Length: 194
Image (tube, rainbow, N blue to C red; front, side):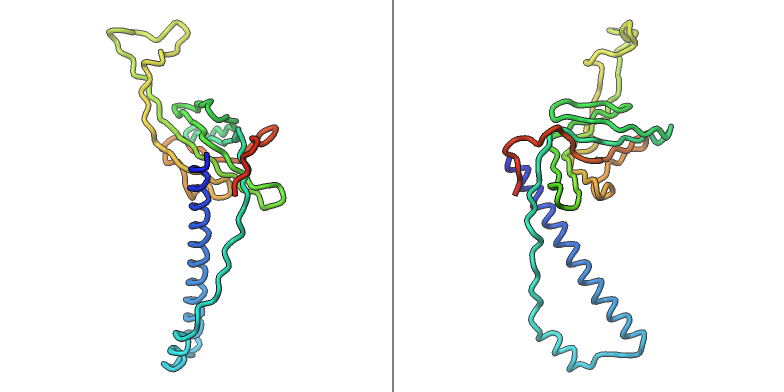
């Protein structure tokens, strides 16, 4: 169980470090643009002095203890009809929405005293009924197809984050699925991450 958690923590750490670097670079470029807009330019001596300065000490973001939950709440959208549905999915109990089959592997959430963030590792499959007219000319009497008649292909496998649904999104022409939060009556025992 520690392998997915360590990959998750490494992914979050890289994401945060990348954000800090992008913000630092953006601030530096903005400062250059402002100084050049007002006709101020740095002399070569000033630039050499800037290069000789030691880099600022960067503090690592604090280590967050994520809590693992057994259930996640997802929101699914049918882009054709505009129908939005909230669904609860448990680990090991796949759900279907339209032609999608969604499986939850793990769901982590920050403790209540920290800003809310939920992350779930989901696998999404596109299902298509492929009846064989020679063996099964019609579906069964209740209108459903046999499980052997379902063709599935994985279209998404990865982390989805509640605070940034576009960061790692499902790309499907008809459906959107995203994480709302992790839910459970109680967190799984002994699963604090850190």
